[in-house]
Image (cartoon, rainbow, N blue to C red; front, top):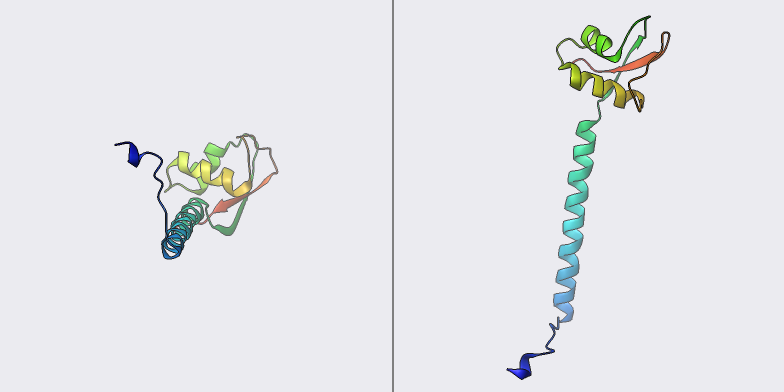
Length: 101
């Protein structure tokens, strides 16, 4: 029993290359998945713009300009597209809108 203590795994050169190659493939695959999910979550700009009117809110703009989209999703898309960190908008402000698909 005592002779198995302290035994370590020794990889050959070929084994180390195989392990390194598998790690590179794994990192590449995960990076590709993250890049694709980020790309899909970011709405594509369509060149459509609206100007914030008096008493407008993001919710009202979403309902008016994107009626076919769930308002919660539409507001989130408008915020991301315009780099808004909160829900504050001002009359006269120009907002880009996501494409109407």
